[in-house]
Picture (cartoon, one colour):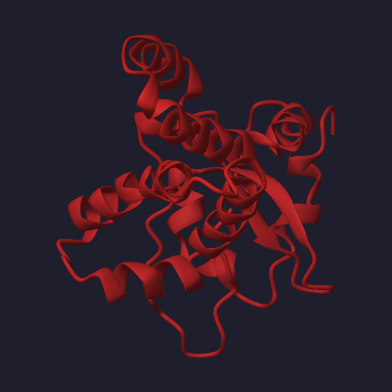
Length: 188
């Protein structure tokens, strides 16, 4: 889910839960959006670019198929441990027990993580379908699961790729047939 979607959904939830409490609503929206600062930190670490506009531009193009002549780098997932609910939510809600005024902020973070993890069953299905192998080369090392558009109909699908195949320029071309090769199918 992108920043704009998190902002909209958090705003809707804040307006419905706290219609007459602007501070609580602002805390919920802040919790629902500011957790994504880890994406910016990882972007800076991988690129050395400190510009927010550069990070936003990268976020717009990183999951799209490039057009002819597009050779911009793609750095893979920009998700840190802050997006792991089992690490973040228990201590956060224990903190809320001590400081109840943080409840809207914690609710925003919880809502953000819920929205981010809704596609988890689809991700696991892609991993199980691939048999724990890269969908392009069959490797079992450094696997990540990516959401990419199919070249022939531009619909999004999930595919398992090793880091080497995910960074190859060849994988992003319009003539991509790797998602339909037999190596991506179990027992093939």
